[in-house]
Length: 170
Image (cartoon, rainbow, N blue to C red; front, side, top):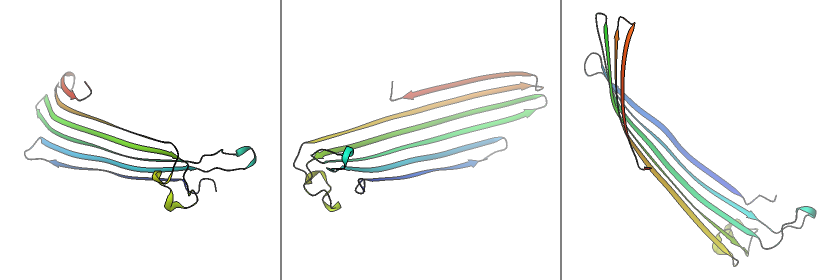
């Protein structure tokens, strides 16, 4: 009963789509895009109660917050494999881009005049002290990837790998 006006809503979309192409023999081009979106709202009302040891003293308090976030990843690779007798070659080239963004905002208000009707549970309906806050974060990454593999008769192996990352965090 105490929490009857408290609400938490969360919505999200998550997915990935990709395509593989083989324009010529031994070459595979792969491209994928993934997304993750979320949004949430939370409301918490602390009413004045007189229930033995569980009393909450005046004034009542309303807390409300909203947040959303979005991240996506875009990856592209080209993979070439060739076998010539005892020699096997593999070459991989690719890029990857990652983007992340999140923001939130919240408000708290005391002395909500009508605290038993959901239609009045907004921070502007109070007359007491109020506090507000909010934040956001954002970062991005872009990578270049290269790899070369060589095998002779499946016994002697050589591998070279290169990677370059560019990040908004540096």
